[in-house]
Image 1 (spheres, rainbow, N blue to C red):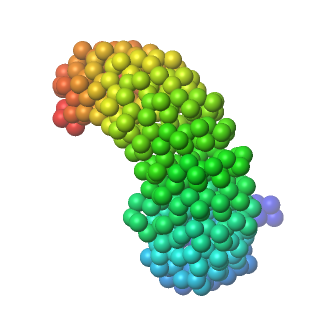
Image 2 (image 1 turned 90 degrees about the vertical axis):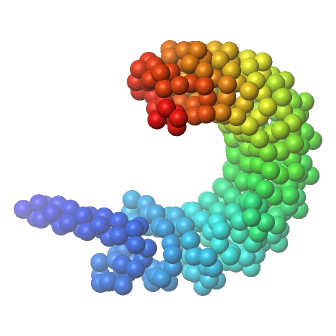
Length: 368
């Protein structure tokens, strides 16, 4: 009998706790204004009152502890950032687009177990990054200069290089070149590096090639050329390569890319390559996601794509592909998504592809 009562109250407790957590996720922490004896703050023995009134998104672990905070407040106060160190399991802090400054980063460095820090488009500089050098658990730092607020450049890479635990470094839109990247080579666990719209060119690629554990590399909208791409051949663990909007590339650039046999994702959006270049990709048997939108692909090139047995997602919009080319894809049973808007494929071609691949979502704005 006692055991049944215990199970009953445990079930009731879990049900109420789940409802509370749902309310917190949907409504922020306004629910803390209710009965404190029903709040997780009371149950876990630490005070969350300092979070009340802020525009936040929260995520908790299975025991109810806060693990992730997304601060949507435009100007998070130093009081808020300083109090975050009272959250014993906080692992991810997203401050993207807020007015977080260099001085504020001095408070963040006290978050001993933080693994992810998103500072994209925050007004921080090299001086702010210097505050983070003592963080021993930080695995990912996300920066972006797309709005001009973040002014980090090559000199800031010295501070990032001192954070030996880093596995993800995002630097899109910043004044970063091969000089800064040279500092990052010491990060032995670096797996993800994004450098879209930076100063990176061919000179930087031999430096990147020394980052042996890279699995994802983004070089979109940079000045790299076919000759430079040959330098990344040593990246034997690379799974995801984004060279979209690299206007200096041509068909010959895909020859070294085709040697990266372990690739699973390749983004060639708005790259001036055609069927001749795409033939170099025939050996990419592990490819799962391929974007050929806005390339010079024709029906002939689709014959190469159809030889990728693991391909699940294919983007071929704004190309010269027609109904004749679509026939190449009809036996590619691995496909789950095909995007072909603004092509010569008509409603009949779309219908035929859907019939041949009933498990695939075929998206064509014109036909739909």
